[in-house]
Image (tube, rainbow, N blue to C red; front, side, top):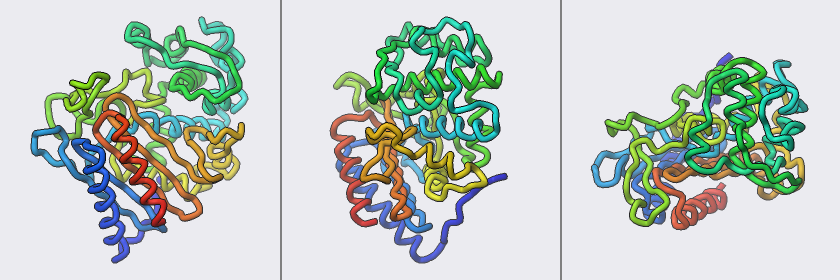
Amino acid sequence: MILTPTLCVTADAVQANLRAAALARQLLAGSGAPAVSVALLQGGRRGLAAMGERVRGTGIDVTRQDLWQIGSNAISMTAMLVARLVEADVIRWEDTVGQLMGDLALHQDLVDATFEMLLSDRCGLSRPAGPRLTRAFSAVRGAEGAERRCQKLLIRRGTALRHSDAGHVVVAAMLEAATDQSWEELITDWVFEPLALETAGFGPSGPAKTLCQPRGHGGPFPWSRRASVPDADEIAVMGPASGIHLSLADQLRYLSAHLRKPEAFLNSESWQKLHRDAAGQGHAMGWDMRNGSLLRHTGSHRFWFNLVLINPSEKSALVLALNTAPTARVRHSAQRAAASFLSQS
């Protein structure tokens, strides 16, 4: 079954587009990014805007149909995938790494970690460090792929919140071991297709040799922050945590599902689990929680920035996407744009 939201196409929708454009102008001027895009949803009215250049200095404008890297906003999608597979009786929330991955060479402290613990960032995992280590990972399916996803993860066991992309890599390894399918196949079949996210994909948003899609800009050095990077993306193994791209409209469609909580897709108990602050530290499965119900998360890596929020009380949602590194100026500008949106919701 394909689940798509019903969006009103009225004069009010024109106002929503104008509001998105105003936020985009504010964000472009404040951030200094080559390009920005804004998508908003308020009471069924959708607004989209995109401004700036796909690559700085080329004069090629971004469009509202372009694809944007969403960084660690991918982790709520991986959590949603787990919830759907739990409802289908393929796995259980309480399944542990040891149960699903058997005698694979994992750190002993990770054996009793469950899906729920990993998705809630409660296992003390640190991100795999260094290019030599990350190159050792492989995204192949089955036991071999699951083992390679989890090799040499750094573990600092504790109960405090410790956000780490590595936990979601382990989750993907568990799913691959349980199903003998790759995470990419699973999330396409169980999340992207049912929600009609037709533009969702993996890796760079466009080929390196053309300018048909925006490119990420920046890097770890001051001299690199204005440069474009043709293949600006994480390595494939990090996909479950930060390797997804999609259009503005599809990202808004995804957020709309979290607002509407369709029971044809997930039952009410599953939606509550995904959105619950289980440990009382302002953190749900892929979401930071504000004021009790506001869901928000910033996805970024070295070359892109993506902020999303959902305000259930106002039935509103916002996407801010920029093709630049997450510098202090970028973060501050995005926070101001988000605050402006919330103040007018």
